[in-house]
Image 1 (cartoon, rainbow, N blue to C red):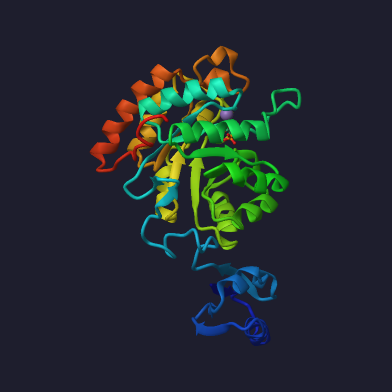
Image 2: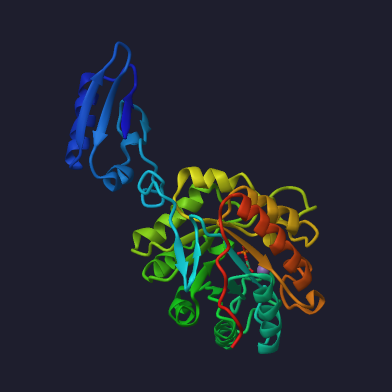
Length: 345
Ligand code: PEP
Ligand code: MN
């Protein structure tokens, strides 16, 4: 961190700044220019970030040298991280194909959809048992019954399963059934929840909040990492815009932008980003071409009967066609889609 003093800062103010820095157990290195004096602060980054150095009289500016998301940053970890979800990897050369319905509705529904997406080449099965619905009157999910269905279906098709947790009090329950735990967009800054999943050693899919900056997403990842859980995968799922033509604005540039800043894998979710099945294939292909480490898509065999997000669901045959196209792009980039388990049991 560098402290730049005001041009009219007095010697007394300078001494005071140095005293404050040293009182924090940090080292101050002075550099006197003709117009300005700057102080290089060396020491424990966490102490530096927590100290309100900007408030000291005579200080013009405090410039961080390292990003505040220390563990998530590519400086801390130059190689891209590969996260293992059961036998499937995401990141590095591996591109995860996450698919399934928005909500788990019944064993028969899950079996039908899992069979279709497994055949198409998906390697992680998703489904929500606790749904964050805008309306309290909308279907809220099957709860633990849904988790059991998801677990059984995943086991049958040898696919690791992903499901959302919304409540810190349910983390223990969801952890018993899931191979990967989703933190949804609405909870990206639920810091209590982030700390709770940070206590686990279970992969976490952390979705970008609908009005969150990339830096805020990385700071939320830092919450999980700093608790001791290194298995974090980020997800770009669209941010709020002003145009109702699409459900959200798909921020494709977030993919390479995040890759430049962080070693964590980044998945795209064109289903929630666009909310339109006719736009999902193009955005999924663009995501793969941009280097996304996974493609997350909602699929339903009968969207008109779906209890959640039916209007944006791809039909199994549309998904099958799309995976074949994504596979070509992935291969051009020298990457691969890990396969799910061999044959349904
Ligand atoms: C979902 O995955 O079904 C979901 C609710 O996602 P998001 O948090 O991105 O809206
Ligand atoms: Mn959904």
